[in-house]
Image 1: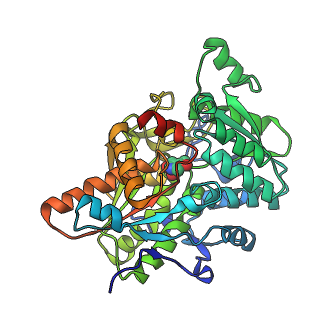
Image 2 (image 1 turned 30 degrees about the vertical axis):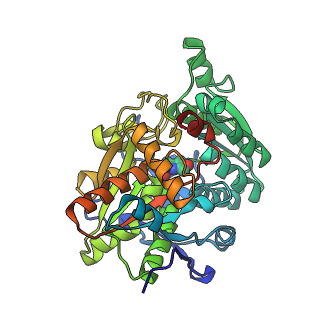
Length: 428
Ligand SMILES: *Cc1c(COP(=O)(O)O)cnc(C)c1O
């Protein structure tokens, strides 16, 4: 029987828990360190910056975490998301591989980021926090936090990387429409921003600088906490709803993926789609290969070193054990602004070190070619970030064509590119 094009999961089968892979990892990730004492960071030390409920998840060893009802209700405005069999892409590639993608672009903000923004706003809200700060690169995380904060009555300040602020004007309109305040980072609202600007008035910003500004702002304003859209373990856990749904949908299609592929910025959509499958490798010895698709301009997993590094440019965050290009790394301008982060997070870095995932570095031209082929076959214009996952999928599908071997590939379509048409315009 032919697999349907769209594999939909009924709403009442939407997962009720997130999956914490730490519970099943053969080697535990190294702890974060307090940069002053160089001792393992304690949960209390994070609570000035992050909501308690999120800190608890960050340090948790528990396998399953209940998704609060309030968050689940909000998830229902776009979840479960479709799993799609990419028949047209398979045909265009003339490959025996069976390709599936999880379509996270159907969320109201157009990407997977809302999966973590909603619980992050929720845990701040129930603690009585009134204001949130965050940073955003391409604007996807800022957009998601803006609507999430609106749902829970929180004020939001977004520090947006200046280059993106100028290059992606509509994204700030999205954030302002939802009611957030948006600043082009570096800016003179913070001491750190002032310092950067005094040394280099034309500085176009980076995610690392924007994080420093948002962190400084959070710790200097009353009843305010900071939120981060990727890298940290609690964010990765929220995103596992993607893979937990995909697991059920693949089962409905009578398939199991040989390869799970996603683009990699800080690791949240990659972890989200792949960890529920990796768990079968840990608990049942199943064979599944994970591939993280990075931009060649910022290849932290492929070319970086595993060491303790800061999460931001100013060195205000805890020290994180991660594959990194260095916290002062300034990647060249690429359209996939969401992939320009310098490091990989502690869980992903440990898994990479232990050989549980592969990575590949993809040049911008190859990524865009893949995005165009996908748009012309499947009909969806992908986010520039997501085109890296598509390019990696195409590489694997072409290998399958050469070897004549049939295999099942699952990739995550992390977002659509409707607010990135400037990038497509330059290309077409
Ligand atoms: C932010 C973003 C990414 C990269 O972030 P991860 O944490 O690595 O998932 C990828 N795709 C889209 C559409 C994004 O908005």
